[in-house]
Structure formats: structure tokens, C-alpha cells
Length: 78
Image (cartoon, rainbow, N blue to C red; front, side):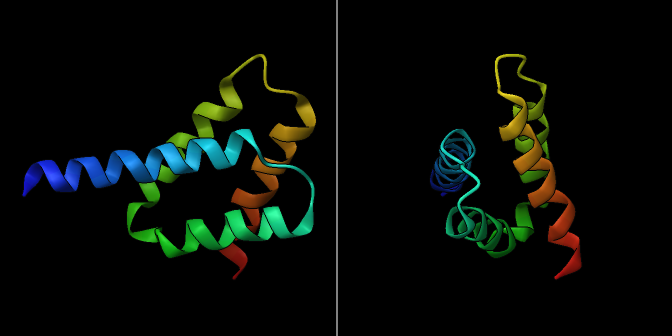
């Protein structure tokens, strides 16, 4: 059972990382990413850690970093 839970968490983190890598300023993509984060709010610490790590990558273009910040900042306004 523990292996199932760990694998599920790892799959969810992989999906979030893929979403962050492929995020564009397109309204639907940003909205989908925001909804995913809200749907998985019970793992909010992991989500914030993942977003923080993505903002720390030097190779990540500034516009993509701004999108991550915007999404994280507005998550609290819902």
C-alpha cells in the first residue's frame, strides 16, 4: 500500500513538472495548471516546493518564471 501511495505522489509530481515545463501564457494552459494545483491542494507543500525549484533553474526563461509566479500568487485569491 505504501508503494502505491509513493508511486502516486511521484506521478503527480512528474505531471506538475511536465506542466511547468510546457506552460505558456495561453489562458487555457495557465487555467488548467491552476485548476490542477487547486485539485491537489492537499499536497500544497509539494506543489510549492516544485514551483520554487522551477523558479530556481537558471536556464528557465524569465517569461516562464513570471507565469509560475502569477499562477502561484493568484492561487490564494480563489
